Image (cartoon, rainbow, N blue to C red; front, side, top):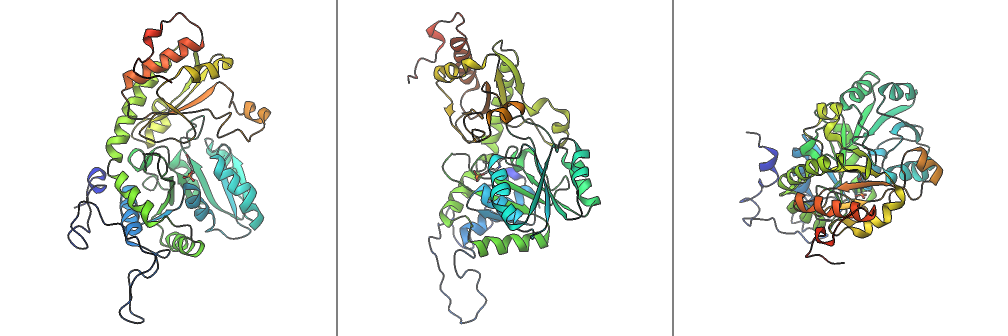
Length: 391
Ligand SMILES: *Cc1c(COP(=O)(O)O)cnc(C)c1O
C-alpha cells in the first residue's frame, strides 16, 4: 500500500525495529562502532551517512515521488550540488529572475570552473529552446518565481529537455511537494530550500535535492560526502519532526493566502497583486496558489509608513514560516541589484512579498488594512489597530 503524503510524513517505518519512541532518537555521533573488521556496515562516519539524515531523506524522497533524496546544509548547498554534477565546459539555462543566491553561485563561483550559464525568460518556452547550445546539459527553472510570481510550464520545459537529451531541474521551494510535483510532470531533479515551508518554524537552514535518476543520485551522493555539505544529524532530526506538520501548516497558510488575496485585490492603496492562484498555467501544474503573494503600493513613498504601522508580520527575508513574513525585495533580496536594473525588472520600492503564516486571516487582514489606511493617511481611527499588540 502506498501511503498518502499526510500519513507518510508522520509514519515512521523504523518504529519498533530500531526504537519504539514516538520520535526517533537523535544519533548524536560522528562515528560508529565496527565489530567486524572490513565488514559491511550501514554507518561508519556521520559525514558519509547517519540514521537521522537517512530517515529524513527517505521521507523527502517519498513526498516528492523520487527514488532518492539528499539533505544538505542549506537550499543553496543542495542547488550547488545539483550544478556541480556538471563538468567544466557544460552549459546551463537559467531563469532571468532566478533566486538571488542561485545567481550569485553561478555568476561568481561556478563560472570560475568554466561552467557556462545563459539566463532567459523561462516563461517563454521558445526562449529556452533558442538558448540551447551544443554543450547544454541542464535546464533549471523556478516556478512560481520570485518576487514577481512568473510561471514556467514544467511539462513544456520537460518536453524540451527530453527532446534535446538534457536534464530538467526545478526549484520547488514555493509550492512544497504537497502543492506541486515536478518529477511527476517530467523533471529529473527537484530542489528545495527546506529552510522555508518544509522546516516551517524559521529555526533551521536546510536544503534537499530529490531525483529518480540513478546517475544523478550517485553524483549527488558523491558530492554530499565528498564536499561535506550534508545536513547535520541534529538539523535532520529537527527537520523530520517539523515535516510531520507540513500538511496542516501548508493547508492553513494556503487558505489564509486566498483570503488575503481577496482583500488585497480590492484595496485602493494597491496597484498590483501577484498571486499564482489565479494563473491558469500554474493551476494546470499545481494544486493551488500556494501561500506567498506579492503586491505593489500605488504610492511607493508610503512604503516605510506602511511597514511602521503593521503589527503582526515579521518584516524580514525568508518565507514559509508559521509566522507571516513580509519582505521588501528592493532593500532585501534584490538590494545588490543596481537601482536602474531593479526598476527595469519592475522591482520597485513599493513592491512587497507576503509569506502568509498561520495567524487568523481576519486579524492579518485587519492589520494590513490598518497599515494601508494609516500610511496613506486616510480617515481611520486607532481602534482598528489590533489592541493587544504594541510596538
Ligand atoms: C531561500 C531560497 C533558496 C536558498 O535556500 P537557503 O536555504 O537559504 O540556502 C533557494 N531557492 C528559493 C526559491 C528560496 O526561496
